[in-house]
Amino acid sequence: MEIVIGISAFLFGGLVTWIAVTQAFKNRAKRIIREAENEAEVIKKEKMLQAKEKFLQLKAEHEKEINSRNAKILALENKTKQRETAVAQRIEEYARKKKELDTVRENLDAQLEIVEKKNEELDRLHKQQVEQLEAISGMSAEEAREMLIESLKAEAKTEAMSYINDIMDEAKINASREAKRIVLNTVQRVATETAIENAVTIFHIDSDEIKGRIIGREGRNIRALEAATGVEIIVDDTPEAIVLSAFDPMRREIARLALHQLVTDGRIHPARIEEVVNKVRKQVEEEVIETGKRTAIDLGVHGLHPELIKLVGKMKYRSSYGQNLLQHSRETANLCALMAAELGLNAKRAKRAGLLHDIGKVSDEDPELPHAILGMKLAEKYKEKPDICNAIGAHHDEVEMTTMIAPIIQVCDAISGARPGARREVVEAYIKRLNDLETLALSYPGVLKTYAIQAGRELRVIVGSEKVSDKEAEELSYDIARKIQTEMTYPGQVKITVIRETRAISIAK
Image 1 (spheres, rainbow, N blue to C red):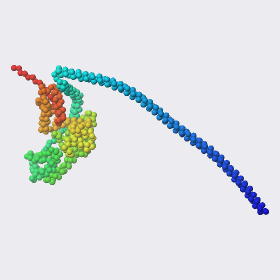
Image 2: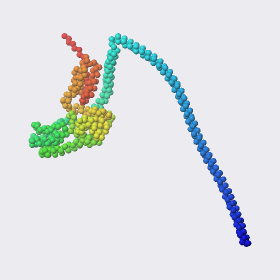
Image 3: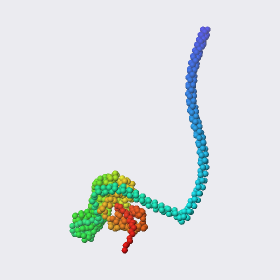
Image 4: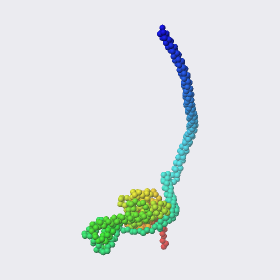
């Protein structure tokens, strides 16, 4: 019984405990559910607030985008309206102009009809007048036109010649005094001795016995000497003299010095001759370089290429028309410097170009070219300035002058060569030039006689008075001068004088 009661009590206690625990769990569950509901309510409110904020944000952005699109659409509509308005205005303007053009076209058509009628009337009247004039004059219209053209041509030619003469006279009056002052001042400030070189060199010996030693056994010595020097050695009956003949002065100088050493030494045989000639040739080449350097220093020309210095030194042994080329180049350089200074140009450049203007004469590179062109190419090869190269190439008009110093070089070259006593012309060439002058003038119609006077510096032309008028005489002198300039080469200038006279001779008996 006690056991049952204990079991019952235990079961009751367990039931009560279970009920209490169950009630506790229910209360806890309710509390948790209540807390969860509260928390969910809070979260719900937060999410709703966030949703509202997001909605408001999206709404604002949407409204903004809509406003922007509306603004663009409005702008496009305004632009479209403006274009439509402009197009409408243009259409109206086009219609108005078209109407005006139609009116103008109608007026022009009416005027053209009137003009055509007037032209037809004028042609008819002109034809009538031409027929009347032909009937009165006895000439056709073509003949009258040709006569009028010839008359106008002669009148225009006469007036043109008169105008040309007036201009030339005015230019001479304005320029002659200044040109003469510059040229004369330049010439007077330079005084240079001119050495006249010949084609032969006379080697003096103490006695005629040395001639035999120079000739050698069976002429071996003289043949060896001629072969080594390239100079023709003339041993004749001239007492105490041997003639060295060659066109190259440098070779003659080498032969002269070699002969001097051989005669002084006394040992004259082919091997010794070759040795001495080679030694002398080296000495002369060194002297050439030294002469070039000394010339450049004397003139104040610096920075020349060694090859150009060598060419300048070789000028010492070359001559042109009997004028020493180095002396001519020095003289031209000084003249160029003075004239450039007078004209306000670069005197150093002019002096440099004047010194180098004839280097083509002493170069052996391309002997077929004119010396001016060859000199220009050499100057370009050795890095001279373009204006100097142009002045060298243009001093004989082979190339076009592009610098201010080019005509100075040409003028000073002519001044140096034309100075009395500076050059010696070959007689045959001199006579040929005079004959060419006279023949050229005789080729013109109406010329009776021609006389070249003053060493070819003046040409007197005598014309027939019945064949050539006074105006035609002026034209003739101008034409002859132009032809001489273009077809002939001459130093200085040539004055052409046309003489026309009428003589009436009667004899009283």
